[in-house]
Image 1 (spheres, rainbow, N blue to C red):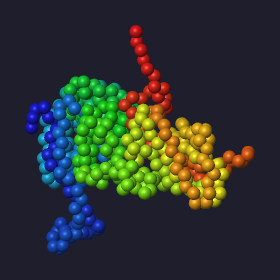
Image 2: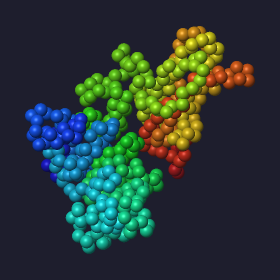
Image 3: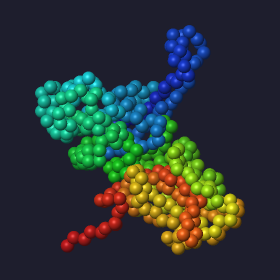
Length: 420
């Protein structure tokens, strides 16, 4: 392997045998039956990529794409069915909570256990222990069994160990999502320190804003295969299409909503909330809806600072004078953050006759900070002093906002700075 390379993955495949019943596994293992009772599942299929020294590379993909599997193979936790892995440098890995820790040992005892597994002497760990405990900041719990830890305390200690044993390669698998926001900020500052020191970082995250902000490159896995590799922004755009099943596999064409073979149902492109509040007299019904990003793609993942559309397709069941279409974006605590309706915008919907359909499109720019939000849709009517709800869908889908620059609060005032 080239000395400039930290990690080289060549044609790696991982196959698991799946059985319908536990007894089938035993029968096949003991050779009691010539019939194959299991079926093969490809967790990874002929995956290849390389990571240069000093690079920060993110791996993204849906659940079951093979992200954690490839990290476990790189770190030696799993063996590949086929292909080769070459690693040039000392690895420190933060995988699933519990990996490499003894639940009965105290935090300090686990520090020594992990250090010795990597090859450090007791004297070396003695010198690093104060820095590890200071970074973890778990107080007296350092002397308690880790089985008594909360998930937040556990990840604090695990990350503190991982980054303070002087690794050349740091591998992190989504574990930082467990820590609180202040600890996550401290961890990402450490990522920046590592990058400046020329160390290599490989991490899996569903936080696309972090992938966009910290990574030099991104790798997209889908159903065990590598779909794309390149600049984070480009790969994230393709990932958004995978999320709404507009990319079946790495050879399939991307379906654009303007093409004639686009899905008939817009909402089929989204994962809807199974406990969405759905109510109203349905004199006018919201029969379809969509969120469309700045590239014209059906997607619930949006880029901060870019324009996007929210569309509602309305259908009347009876005579409906002056319906009002609306949307609201809320945070995960249920606080209304922003929204509008056709009445506020001065765009009146003409009266609708039975069976008539109309499409309402709200176009705006996304100025909310990066994070997760909930979208609600509605169709109502004001008549004199009465208020009538035709149809409401509360928290019908989630929105994921990707940002490489967050400011204080919930939205960006788009400040410009001049210094003289």
